[in-house]
Image (cartoon, rainbow, N blue to C red; front, side):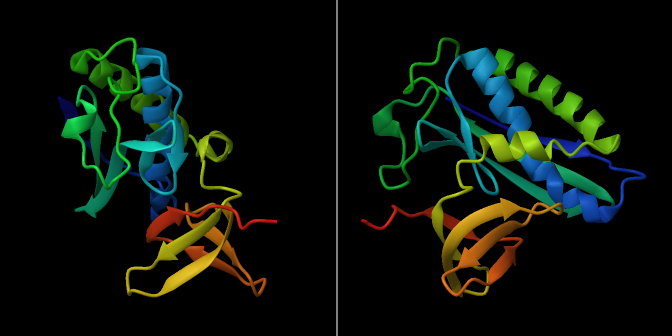
Length: 190
């Protein structure tokens, strides 16, 4: 009912400082493929979630190992609402009325998009503008639980060249977040 796969990338010749953009680039590729193949609107939640109508439909993980990057992608395809975790605000393509849910066709579409974006990335184009345009996190109030357990609250003000989320706290200080669990907060009443 889902599609889970890993892609091995060997970014030979690309400075390691740019590798942090790969999960974001994979998100752009996944969003473009799902929109084209399944016909549902998508958005991205920093750093690694694909949203359909505000609910999580896919996740992307990246791991560096032996000079390579492994991208793991999990996409909910045909799960019915009762088969999805009730507390995770999850959804599937079928639950959102996708016009196509053929997993093989989806896989081919994602791999084609990813290959195209990877070629652009190698040439120096990180698709940063496309990521920012698709990122539903930007401009929102967020709460970020950092890996060490600290919590940061503020406005998601941007994404830097290394793929880090820029969070502007209430005191005006902007923090660069490279990893953390992000929760989109509702705007405070005015």
